[in-house]
Image 1: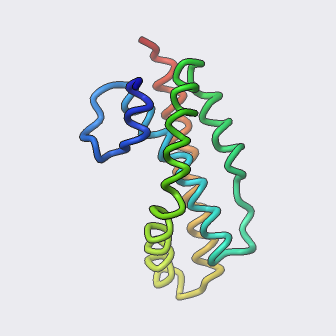
Image 2: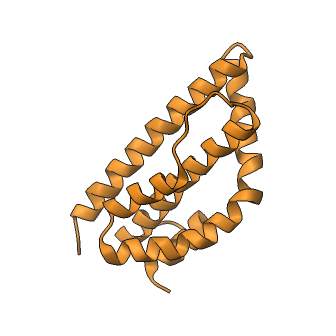
Length: 137
C-alpha cells in the first residue's frame, strides 16, 4: 500500500506524520471529512445550509494532487467513506453541541458559525495541499 493511501486509511491513529505523503494524506482525508460533516449537519440540524457536494470536494482534492497521489487518495477514500456513517455522527454532534452556547443557544446562528468555520478549515487545508504538492520530491 502506498504511503498516502496508508495514511488516509489509518488517519492519525498510525502515529505522527513524518513525510510529505503522510501530511498530504492527512490533509486530504480531513478535507473530505469536513465535507461529510456538513452533510450530517444539513440532514440533522441545519436544513437551510448550502453545503458542498462530496464529489466536488473529492475533485478539489484530486485536482490539487499529482496524478499518482490522486489515485492513491481515491483508493483510500473508499475506506473513509465506509467509516463516515458510524464515525462522524458523534464527532459532529459534539461540535454542534459546543457551538450552541457560544451562539446564544440559537440553532441557526450555530449552523452558520459551523459552516463558516468548516469553510475556513477546508480553504486552509486545500491551500496547504497545493503548497505541499508544489514541493514535489
